[in-house]
Length: 226
Image (tube, rainbow, N blue to C red; front, side):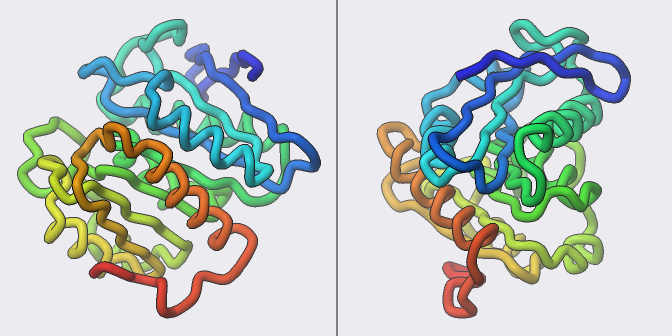
């Protein structure tokens, strides 16, 4: 693991950790962490598990802290500043490997990741875990309009625990129907945090990344669980 530093477009200095795989790098990934106002950072067991799984698939993985979190400069940016941070992270990880970038976000980070992917064509595929939907009670930027989502044809994984209060399954399936190339996966017996199921969630994310970046997503898998 290597500590790295990079700058957002507005000059804010951000800290991250770069996990390079053994062997030839096939692609790269960026992980977007949960809400900093609730203590979210890159240092969570779920994100560690995802980082390690993706590295076994020979992706260079960049985990980073948004502005105002731990060693990163600046202060909370209302979702807009964090989007700029994620954009800068994509640029940094592309220094490790050209080509496909896989973006993965959890909770608040899922909100960041989908807005990033819609605006940045360098993101080839996207995974969102526990995307806050419905009446989540969280102060987040609004979900992009349905018409904009319908034009997004790159592969998307929507993953949630069946008991996630912030990501109700009916709302998750509705979002899946709005995204043309989505897979919806609901993990039974867990909630927003995937406690003690981190390795299972990481495997689901890694398998999706493998299909989306390096192989075809089968029609039977696309949109499963809707």
